[in-house]
Image (cartoon, rainbow, N blue to C red; front, top):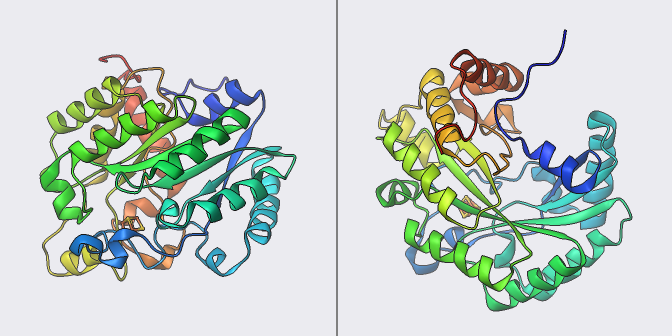
Amino acid sequence: MPELPIPYYPISRFYKERFGTKVHKISVATAETCPNREGIRGMKTCNFCDQWGSAAYSKNLEKPLSQQIDEVKKIVAEKRRAEKFLIYFQAYTTTFSRVSKLREQFELALSYPDIVGIVVGTRPDCISASFLETCNEMAKRTFMSVELGVQSFDNPTLEWMRRGHTGEESIKAIHKISSACPDVNLGVHLIFGNPNETEEMVIETARKINSLPVHNVKLHHMHVLKNTALADEYAAGGFAPMEQQKYFHHCMVFLQHLRADIPVHRLAAFSSRWDELVAPAWTSFKMEMYQGMLSYMRDRQATQGQHA
Ligand code: SF4
């Protein structure tokens, strides 16, 4: 049976177009903290963030970078049959570390012949001039991507998340990165499934992204992990995770209003430590959820960009 077309622009297709082959991201963890955890300007740990700072491979924090790369590369090459890789500096806020250290780590990553680029995750308030200078230099040598944890442009939602930055600050950071590093591929992380979230808010988010110099987006849904402020709120009855069908709907509406040329990393978050997931249970089944999302869009003949 012929494969059905995917109703959105997946990042895997972008990588194939850009590199001419299948490319997989390898997540590594080198940063140990972030401004929120350090309580800078009175900030608190984000309400959804677990003790691992969103690291996919939490044990990696204890290992040298070369060991992390070797181990994860082996697993990913076997599982996904990828031949080329991007190194994703993911956990906590990587750019909160010293830039000289970061530069050394980039050089180490690029010393591998099958590593075709660097991806760095950060926050809108951790964009120093020296970081931008490093990104700019790297972008002239390799594929350099910065993924910015914007999460939402709605300030009450950001306050509830305890992000410690506003939507306006995120927009400023996007422009700052784009003008200082025009060759950097700029991604934005967004979370849907927040309290009081409406379809109009989701559409407005897509419109904002369309108007900004953003090259890709990653979608998460607000899920509850153990040992987080959100877990306490959930236990006290103050937060109810969004139901699956409603999340699918918000995701679909966002994609319909998102420009068709913006690749999308994924459609929802998946906890890499299942024992830590508190709710919602429907997120435990990664493939079922992904297929369910695709069917939801196909059944409605929805495609990315059709209302952009
Ligand atoms: S989500 Fe990022 S910025 Fe927020 S507490 Fe976790 S590591 Fe820090």
